[in-house]
Image 1 (cartoon, helix red, strand yellow):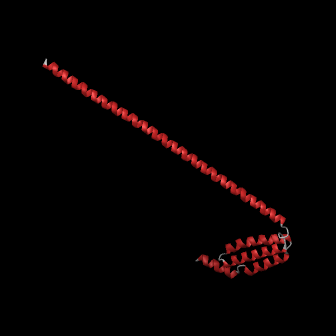
Image 2: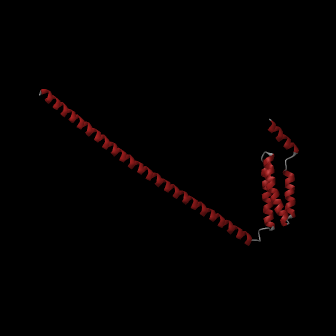
Image 3: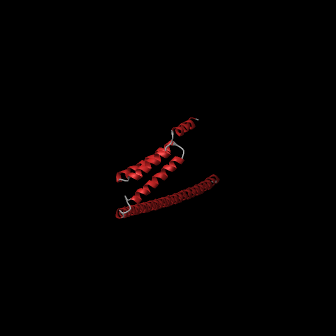
Length: 171
């Protein structure tokens, strides 16, 4: 009988131990479910934040594009207004005063090109001056064209200058 009593005590201890283990397992399972729910909530919050920031970025991009378009439209409008003013002020455009201004610009451009070192820069500036000269010639301003030719001849690089530049590049 003592053995039966010991077996009963042992069985009840085992049942108690099993019940404790079961409670711990259930608690662990519940904690895992809670942490899973928390992780899901955090993931949803992060997704919401990301979507919100994407919407804000899209909104900012659209507003910057709208600003750029409006500034482009303003530039086009001011360009059209300048063209209208230019057409309405035919007294200046293609007048002797205009031709003299073009001559002044060409001479200053040539002088700056002659001061700078480098044949390449001179050629660039000479190209622009030749465009101005061609426009003046087309409009019939022969005196200004002759003055531009004089300044080109006066300021063009000499053979000695070109030789010095080649030597400098070689070293």
